[in-house]
Amino acid sequence: MASELPLKIRVDIRDQWDSPKSALQNSVTTLTATLGHKIAPSAQWPLLWGSLKESFPDVADFVPAILTYTSAWYEQLNGMLENDAYAEWTEQLLSVLSNSSGPEFTLNVEVQGSTGPHARRLRTYWDETLKSFYLCIPRGPLNRSLVATSINKELTNLFDSRTSRAQQSEIDEEGWADVEESDVQSTIAAKTVLPGSVIVGGQTQPIGLNKPRTLPTITSLGRPSDLLRTSTPHLLIIEAGNPMMVQCSHQPSLELLAQYLNKWAKTNRNDSQKRNILAVDLVESDFSVGVIDAIRIEPNIAYGRSGPINPTIVMAFVEGILGYKSVHSMGNRFVYRSEDALN
Image 1 (cartoon, rainbow, N blue to C red):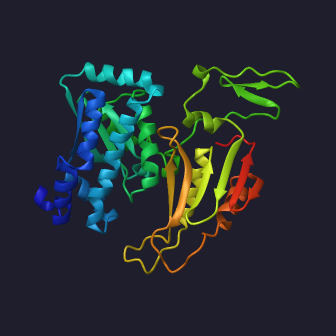
Image 2: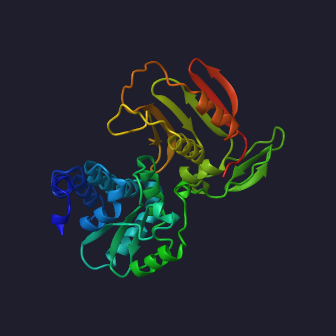
Image 3: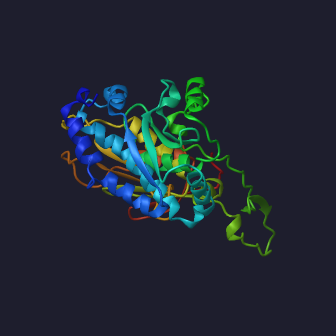
């Protein structure tokens, strides 16, 4: 079966997937040391290539794309295990693995089985019957900016609905997971915060004039990925330049802006790889695992222009579509604020 693969892919599998010195195998070793169980990656390469080759006209991009998904799975899982905020989730994982036979498990990398709209959604789940993890990568081009947060969200919900592989296939075929790519980061419904009110312990409470407000306890606060989506005001900062940075406390605002800019991006005709002139990438926060708090916009390659990137389209989108209001500006920094609870 391996002989069906192009030579370049076979070489990349040998050097970047199977080699003990590869970055992926280093991630596996790191996770094993943290978890106490080995989870070995496994991929049916001929099946993967047969399903995805239309999305990779350059075969040199195929294995690195699969590695992007797989390495992110190990990195996100290891990050959650080392984060005290996921202590209860970690106990669930350890309990599941301890009750399964053998110290070694498998991460099976597959392609989403359906051709429906939800085929573009990344998913991961634990198969109770086969005692294996599954990583179902979406069909279509790789969107690097969504990989980390998508995997983190999937891992967070890993034990909410355990299923078997057969049941998972039924879910895919019947369309229960019919989610567009833009819904990968679907949010918890935001609570409307009226003027003069705040969210305390998940409840909206009025603030009286000159009345002291009790701060919430740390145990009543959700994860940053949930808390910042539902708490107002939302803050957004644009730092014009090259690169241009857009920082925001509301992740869905950043995701929509990045998707819009990438959808209408201009292709660089002088680039042999036909990449967009500007790379628009979501940036994971240094504060918390799985949280996006910035967009980085910069040229993919030098294309004959210098100086700062024109920020006007971004600024117009922030005010006209997202509804943020300008607060102040200084030099190349523009600060915006939204009092509305955004879904």
